[in-house]
Image (tube, rainbow, N blue to C red; front, side):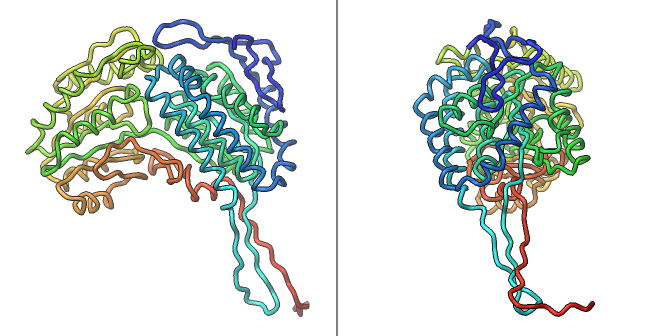
Length: 485
């Protein structure tokens, strides 16, 4: 695919109306992958209008028919999993295992959404008046604007597309400029083949300089009724404020500084394995990545030795090689920020235990000891393969340190007993907490989201139905009323 036709609007593949385009590249090799349409604000508005035209018919489509489309898409995706995974490897620096997981999870999102087609149920409420019936129903909201990131582009685009469509909405998808193929173009191709009616899903790709203007144009269209955004807290705050100015309900899944607490009495080998996975999987470029390792002082040395040994064993390089476990950082700007945080921490007294020496866009798994919670690396999102270790006296201090953050997305706990871990879980300011596990975990049927600066609203599961439908009250007066005037 190199013809620049990556806009999927009203059931047709198109170039930008201005003819503008840009190139997407492989972060591991630097080679160009494809020509991508660089949409203008006018193109974005055309996509929203196509979705608005498709909405009346799609909302009237039976839940069974909607479910059939989603299940066809899931089957098609599973049948071509290796092909789709290869695009993720080339475009985002995913190792093949991560890419295959992402494809499988995206298919699971489709199947879960298909099941939710029949779950947007209403209720009958009692009335204060005789002869009256109060009906409450869930109805589609309208056009949903979904803006997805580059780190898990297929999975996170699908999360913002599948359930809204299942509930009778139409969707305009704007994938990241760093992953327009796996986060946008492939979804358009998939749903085209699954026979989704034209306009129900529209895909708008654009370059970084065009993002804000195109996004603002689409968000300002009166047909857009919901915003699904996954990305940084900085951008999420700005776009969420713009949505609320129009009273559009936003679902924002934003950044994290996710802790894993490790207390004495736990299995240190298991804890070190979980922390290594949380810190280094996909180069730490996950919203749920473990970015603070909070360890009880009495076991800190033993735990740290195990984590450093694990970090040093991981193979770094081009993910096209199946033996590689850690691939490239997505772009130079992101690598610069990671390295700046590491160097600043060392200057402030942290101890570099391994890693810390970038090579091109490859950043090795890095472990830092003697980290304090005042350091920037313990407070700001790093989004890289770095494990800052913070030592604490006991469980109470561990909770205090974990909650000392503007973020609250995900957390993990390893303790002597599950009861102790559950007691701690209830005290954490976090949208998700995993006992005896990494901070990196998700299931398509569970409510995914955070609190504080990590976002508002939930994706996944039945709670997400509230986000993408409107509640309508219909009162039926069976018998004649007597009015006061």
